[in-house]
Length: 441
Ligand SMILES: [Zn+2]
Image (cartoon, rainbow, N blue to C red):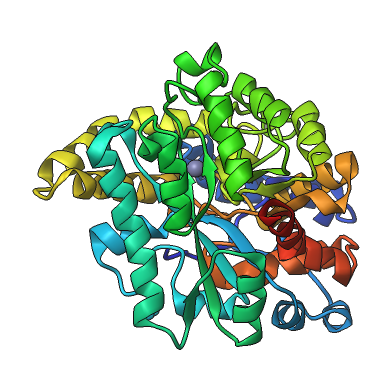
C-alpha cells in the first residue's frame, strides 16, 4: 500500500512555543498562525477526509536506546508466527506470485523475510455470500485455497515448507525457510458433516473457527443478527470434541459470545483467538471481553492480537461506518463496472474502500496494538498473547505496520515499553508453539 509522508500541524503545540513573547507580538503571531492553519483545520474537521496518513513512529528513540536491543537481531533468533493472513484469496483470484515483491497487498515472501517472519498461518476463508454457507461450492473454495498454499510450498521449496506442527515450524526455521500453515476461517466447508473435520485435518488444516461473520447452523457469529442468540448446539460441541481428538486448534475469533462460552466449556485442549482485540479498549462485538480473555487463558490458550485499526482504536469502527455509507454508491459503481466474476467484483469494491479509508480515516500506529497486548498481559500474563495480523484481509492497516516487512516495528515498541527479550520471543511465536504442542498431544 502506498503511503504518503506529511507533517501534520498540531494546533495544541502553538501556545507553548509563544510563552516568552511580549503580549502584542504573541497575539499577532497567534492570529497569523491561526489564519495559516484555519484551512487545514476546516478541511480536516468539516470534511473529515483527504488527510494523508501520518507515518511518524509513536515515540522518537535515541540511537543509544536503539543499540540496547536490536529488533532485527531478535527476529533473526526468535520464531515469529503470524496466526492469520488472507493471502490465499489473492493466490487464487489474482494469481499473484508470492515469491516476488508485490507492489500491493500486505504479504509476499520477500517482505515476510524482511520482517523476520518464520511461519504464516494462511486463512482458508469461504465467503458465504459468494460460495455458500456449506455444500460443494463452499468445499471447493476451501479445497482450492488449501491447494494454492501447497502449490506455493511445492513451487518454491527454497523458501517455503508446508507445515502442520510445532516441530515442522522449528525445523523449517532452522533451515532458514518460511513455514506455510493453514486454518479454516468459518466452519462452512465442513458442510455440517463431522467426518469432514478429519478430511480437512488430513489436508493439513490445523485450526478452525466455527463461524466467520455469518452464523452456521451449529455456531453463532458475532457478525449477524442470528448470532445474538445462537451459541454452540450439540453438533457444534461434537465438532469441538472431534477437533480436540484430531489435534486441530479451536479458534474463537468471529464467534458470538454464547458460542465462545460453549467452546471454552467444551474443549479439553487450549483454545485460541487467531485475530482479535480487547473490548476494554475497542468495544466491538468481534473483540474479547476481560472475562473471555481470562477464560481463554484458563484453557492454556493464546489471544493473538489483530493489526486492524477497526478492532484496535476506540471509535474507529463508527467512523468507518460513516465513510462506508458516504462511499456506498462509488463502491457499487466499481462493482458493476468490473466485468469479471463475483470474486473480482469483490476485489473492485475492496479497492475503492481501501483508497477511501486511507484518505478519510485517522491513522493508527503500532503503539495502539501494543496497548492491547499490554492489557492482556496485565489480565492474564505474558504467556497468553500472540499475533494475528489479518494481512490481505483488511482494507486498512496500521500506519507503521502496513505490511509484513514492518513487523520489527512491533518488536521495537514492545522493547520500548520494557518487555524483556524472552517476553518478546513468547509474544512473537513462543506461546503459540506451546499451544500447538499441547493440542498435538
Ligand atoms: Zn477474520
